[in-house]
Image (cartoon, each protein chain N blue to C red):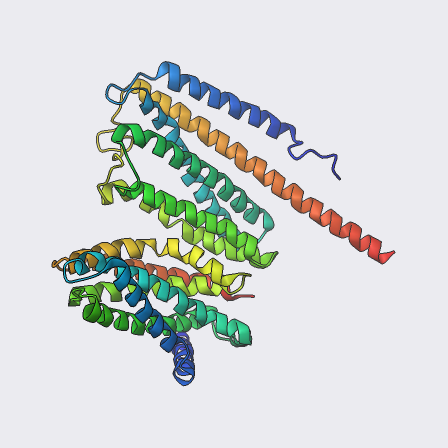
Length: 220
Length: 239
């Protein structure tokens, strides 16, 4: 119970910092908007090509927005030395990690909301409930892995360079399964329940593994 | 300090020679003993090394996981050294596997990666990239304990892709043929082919083991040398 309280407190702290500073979300919102504008020009999207190219655009923007969002969570702490302070308390590293991952996941969720609305409004991509469900299911695992490897990359030289190299291949299962599911959902079908289950299972599995590994990653 | 040759170890010398002989024997079986494939002709002979190298690569990555778990659990530099050596050799084996696969696929299916995606190829390349990142983190992390700890975490998580590569032929039905060795009715190939495959597999696994041992020895000698240099520098400073 104590761990849950700590995780919630850390998540609350991160979200409050974001709310007061309003740094990450406006920047990410602009990033998402820019990415959509560029893909609109690059692919010449319309009602016909939208459903076909839409899933690709969705995943590209989502993955790169995720890289920025997760990269910032631990980089900020590292710059101010506040992570060490948190680790000096009696709080378990797994709880601190979970809190930070939840906060980063929520920031990514806000981005996704914007991205899906933007895609429906400007690119003519058919965003149905099934698409939203798949994206939500993916976010669980993406947030766990992204936060773990952001914490890892923050301890190295050249962290901006290393984070994508580390985390993109590990997000691969989500991009492949999620990509297929979004493709079928945008093509008029419904997201298969099996794909959703696989994504959620993978997410929970990675979340537990990441929380277990947090002790080794955060411990300086 | 420099008079110790890197592989100055009699056991390793003997094992290396034995590995070369085993590979030659496997080569002889592939080209002289195994029958010609009725449909694909001589190019099918790539199969023996292609599959053996993949299995050897997987075995190396399993060794990375084993070494990494042991390092995180017990500490001890030798576990980290084992994981590091296995990752390097695993990447070499995976490169052999990918290259041979491309050479094989071109004449048989007229495969062009720019036109058709293949699940097995893509997932294998992702596996290659993951363990490439494992080596990168060793380079970028602060040297010492932190480097070993961070690399161990990457090494363990990276193994997730191995079952995906293995199952990719049954999950996505793309170009790469399905399993022929592990099927419900036993191996789907004539006995001489199976014998050739088994000999090649054993030879490649043996070679892999020797390569990991060589790499392990290089790493430990390197560390020894660094420590000796440090000790010499300290002595000089004390005088």
